[in-house]
Length: 406
Ligand SMILES: Nc1ncnc2c1ncn2[C@@H]1O[C@H](COP(=O)(O)OP(=O)(O)O)[C@@H](O)[C@H]1O
Ligand SMILES: [Mg+2]
Image (tube, rainbow, N blue to C red):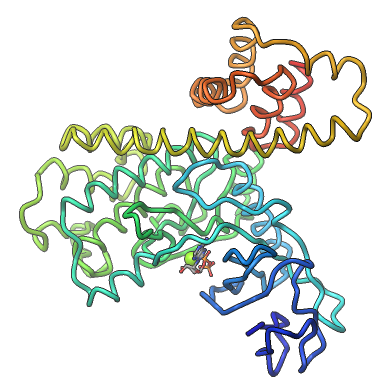
């Protein structure tokens, strides 16, 4: 079956041999490469479908259904962020995975993003499927370790998620978690802070997970920790955190509902759920450190992520190298560039790159430089700088970084 994504279509179901919708005449092969199979979800501003690409691989297509300029901006931001992130706990966007599609006889486009399909269930569905039976403390502790490390990458690249909740976290069949729905993610920039002060920031509210400062349009990175704390309470109790709200004390009193948990863990979650951002952990790394104090064996979670992200960054660089080698054969690189292709990378040059990269993305720069080199010892200086530049969120900054080094 091929589905038509025209929101106005009366009969979207079509046989898989058709190229055009039999009801409204819109193209069924989206962007010339994706066939839509079925609907996965329906949010406030969009629809999520499962599609098949040209290799019949399942992917996820998100379609924006409301073209209000603010939503379009957030949607494009989601594509941008997914393109920058390189973590096994975050879905990867397809090559040229953001595009627009025009249904038949419509002047306004539909904005689309196609990304990796995570095989699994989101945590809300997962709990329903297991008959709303709470998750064990041991498993939740490991999941918190995973999520704090995923969030660390998001925050280190100077973004915050702003909508962490069970339906935006997926559990894969291998037991690992993936954070999805970057539609509300925000770059923490001066212009954001100015807009926030002027009350021009689009609000997102998920009851039980959104902290009060975010409801007032003053989200900070620590708002994500509150939402994460709420998610943990949901997993341990199978109830919305607000069910435990004590208005007299302005506190979420959840701990009595869960047996056999360590007092340190209760303190950690309570601090994450503190009414004021200042009472919460400062960084995602601080949360991870607290978990390791409770169960040191969970250090293995970090080793696992490191291994996986090294192999995925090496894949990404292989793709990048293919692109580079094709363009090297076919286009006219100037002389300076081809010399840079041949030059071997010296340790001084790596140090210089690291120093420059720190300015743009902070301490993550060291890890990224080391990973990139360790997996691709034969990169030329040009390829190395290109690979690092791809990890800088802001396009202008990335350009400046390249200019300084090449
Ligand atoms: N990459 C993905 N892989 C598999 N399923 C996904 C993926 N992204 C989204 N989904 C499913 O679709 C649902 C809606 O997607 P989401 O990105 O959360 O959009 P929204 O909540 O804004 O509608 C999710 O809760 C999840 O069940
Ligand atoms: Mg969602």
